[in-house]
Image: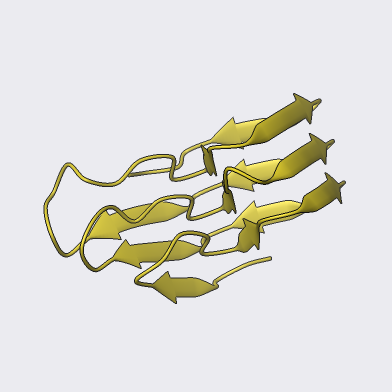
Length: 96
């Protein structure tokens, strides 16, 4: 997943609200822009009902921004509100 964008909601690359496994994947250079609150989870957003497993992947150079305020965004690489399992994965150079 590369160069995807979401405006107004979380999950520039991937949004998970169920059960998901990401294996040997690259999520890079995705963006999310929050309209009212933060731009969360530019790489992956895992909501409160989500059960996300990430194995052997790279999550890098994702950017979350907000129209509402400069400090509102969080979790540029991964925004997690549910259950998250990460193994052998590089998460680096993400910006919120």
